[in-house]
Image (cartoon, rainbow, N blue to C red):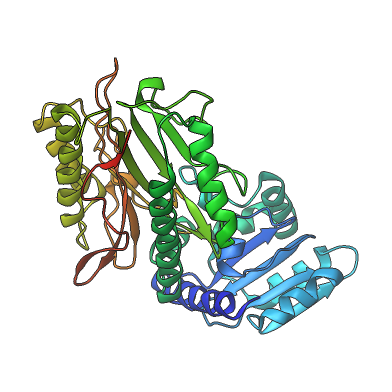
Length: 398
C-alpha cells in the first residue's frame, strides 16, 4: 500500500480498537472471500482472494488466517500481530484460533438497515455456525453495526484531507467546464467534458464505472437520476450537473446549476433567479445546523422549511447525506422524520462527519428546478465548508 493509504488504515484500526473498548467487545470478526465484505478496504486496505478470517481485538493484537497465496499481502501491511497460513482448508486453523482467543463477545458485520454494515454473507455465517456451534455462537455474537457505522462516519485527519483534495479537484473541473460549455451541445457532450477533465487529472468517477459522466440534466428534458441524453441544450435552458469524483478511494459529491442565456439576455429571468436564491438560502440554513449532537431530521427540517416557505413543493429527498469512501456513505442521514421511526435520520451528528448538503427546488411541467450541492465537515468549532460555494447562478452566454 502507498504511504498515505497505510497511514489511513492504521488510523482506522486504532479508531476501531477504541470503539470496541467503548462497546465492550473483545473481538471483531470479518470473514471474507474475493473481498466480499465492503468493510475490508476501510479496515485492512488489501484484497483477499481466498477465504480469510480477520480477528480484530480490542487489545490491538490482531490476528488473520489467510491462504498461502494471500498471507504475504497481509504480512506486508504490518497491521497484524499474528498471520497464520492454511494450505487447502481454513477450518482446523479457525477452530484452534477461536478456542485460543477465548472470545467473550464477537462483533459480526450483519445489519438489516445498512448495506455497508452487512458484509457477512449468509453462506459464511452458516459456515461460522457450523464451525463454532449454533448455540455457542448465539451466546457471544453481536452486530458490528454501531461500531462500523461510527467508524465509517467519523473521519480521521487523513480521510478529511483526502476528501478535501477530491473536492478541490471537483471544483477545478467544474470551473474548467464552465469556461468551455456552449449552447447547442448535447447533454452527452457536456458529460464528456467532465470525463476528459477526470482523465487529464488521473481521477475517476465516484459513481458507476471509472469514466462514467456525471448526471447532466437539462430541466426541459426531465430531471431524474438518468444518463446524459443526446438532446441539445438551448438558450433558455436550466442545466443541472451532479458530479461525484473519486480520488485515492474517497469521493466528493457536488452539484452546480447553469442557465443558458437567450440572445440579448444579461441575466436569468426573475423566476429562475428566485429559485436559485431560495436554494442558496436553504443550503446556508442547513449548514448552520450542522452542530455536534443535532439529529439528522432537525437539520433536514431547517433546510426544508426555507424551500416550503418560499412557495415551492417540499423536497423529494433528504437535505443531506454523508460522503467518504462512497457517495452515500451510510450513517446519519439528514432526512425527514417519519413514523415508524427511520433509524438513519434519528442519528446524531458527530465531529469528523462529512456531509453533502443539497436542499433542492424540484418542480414539474417545465417550471424552474434548481440543484446546488456543497460538502461540509462537522467540527467542534462548528461546520466547515470544504467546497467552494456556488454563490450565484452560473451563466452561459448565447
